[in-house]
Amino acid sequence: MTVYEAQARVAQIRSRFGLPAAAATGGGDAFAAALRSTVAGGPATGTAVVEAAKRYLGTPYVFGGSTPESGLDCSGLVQRVYADLGVKLPRVAKDQARQGTAVPDLAHARPGDLLAFGDPVDHVAIYAGDGRMIAAPHAGDVVKSQQVYETPTAIRRIVPAAWSDTLSGGALSAGAPAVAPVGGGSMVAAAALRPAALNGVPYAELFQQAGAKYGLPAALLAAVAKVESGYNPAAVSGAGAQGLMQLMPATARGLGVNALDPAQAVDGAARMLSANLDRFGSVELALAAYNAGGGAVSRYGGIPPFAQTQAYVPKVKAAMEQLAGRGFA
Image (cartoon, rainbow, N blue to C red; front, top):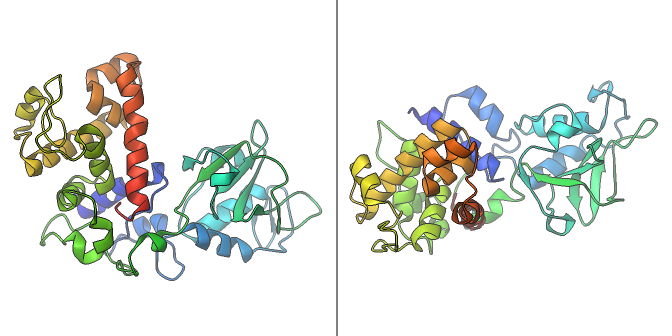
């Protein structure tokens, strides 16, 4: 896997959890354009989304409009604003309302989140904070800031609200790699990039190294370890799963690793998750396969109806979001 393939996979997985995309390390203009903000040379944030939307205040509403010169409708505004920040969204409201990750209610909404209205969705706006949104309301009106006048039917987080706020004193400078290079150079120590993010995350360097090697977010690997073993490298489950990543002995043998050796366990688990992603094409299904086995996922055509697995997937997702909120992603 090349560095750009690894970064693309990391960015895809992060986007599913509403996490920041990895900054590009050079070259790959199309990749960078799709994942990074062109504003101030940094990754797109919720705050940047709101600021970009403000530039279109006063633009006339035109049904089907997608350019500010001729006018914008609601979804045209949303698509244009995110495109300005290097984030590609579908054109119509109902499809936009399925992007990113779900936010439970308006109380948890952050600036930059998408607010969707109607069932089926027929209107979208950009949340600006303090109960206000920026929207292209209807014919005869203009793009404007207005109160959120009814309860949204969906709220979606496309980019983090404040990526820079999760870093300690701006430790990760604009343009610095969010994952270390995966070939032709030494592994960049995570502490050199985000020292605060490593605090309280056992085996952080192992997660970052394996994540960079196999194209996975370090937070995903750390979240699996947290849920599986509580970061205990000597843990043994009642079923016989062993070590930091709770690999079954047969699985560990198949991977050629010692489950009780943290470095080997993390590497093996990362390889398995990467293979699950390739096989099932979904983070949720990859996690389900890690817990219940790929055969069970294939047999049921989705997350198996096992209580443990049904609980496991959201637990790992929640742990990943918590880690990313602390700046470890």
